Length: 290
Image (tube, rainbow, N blue to C red):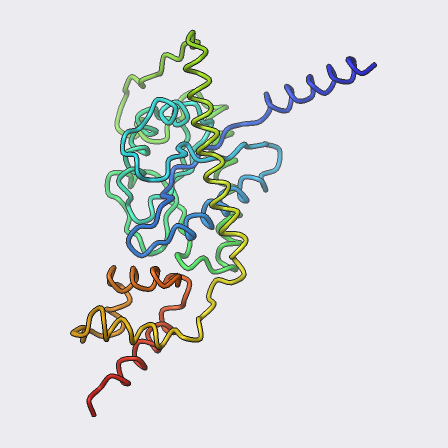
C-alpha cells in the first residue's frame, strides 16, 4: 500500500514538473550607482509575483545566474539557463554590463524575451524594436500593482504566441532571415564533476536565500532614522571631510559619504533623500563659525 502511494505521488510530481514552464530573470543583483542590493530583491519579488498571478500557466521563476556579482565569466550553467528558459524577463535598469551581455545572448537565440526598465533609465537604441514595460524606480505601490498586471499579461501573450507561431521572433526577425544558434547539450558522463557543480549551485542558492531572508527580516525597519544621525553626519564633516562645502543634494550622491554611513551601520538608501538632506543641512549649520 505504501509503495503504491509513493508511486502515485511520484507520478503527480513528474506531471506537475512537466507542466511547469521556466521563466528566467536577467537583472542586476548587487548594489550599483544609486541602486541598493535590497532594491533589486524587491524588483525580483515583483517579477516573481507577476508570474505567479498568470492564469493557466505555471511558471518556475528564477534568476538565470546565481552569482553574487563578483564573477565576470559567464559559466556554462548560466548560458544553458539563458537558452533553456521558455521565456525570459530582463530588467535593463541601470544598464548593468553583465545584464546587457546576458540579454545579448538571449536575443541571439531569438527566444521569447520581455524587457522591463525603471522610469529613470533611458531606452537603449539597439533594443528599440522590442517593447519595453516601465515601472517607477521608487516602486510606488499603486503603480507597481498596475505594472505587475501588465507584465503578467505580456508574459502570457508572448509565451502563447511563441508556442503557436513557428515564425515568432523577439528580435532577429525584424532584420531579416538568420540561422539561430543552438546549444549541443549532452549527458554528463563524469558523475563526480556533476555532483560538484550541483553542490556549488546549491551553495549559491542558499547564500541568496539567506540574503533575502535577512532583508525580509529587517524590511519593517527600513526608513528607520537613528536618533544620533545628526551627530554621525557632523563626525563626517569634522573628521572625514572637513572641507566638504558642497550642497547636501550633491553630498548624498558621494560614495565617500555613503560608505561612511554604511560603516556606522546606517543604510543611506533606506532614508528618504529629503530627510537625509535636512539632517546634512542641520549638521552643516552647527559647524558654521558664526
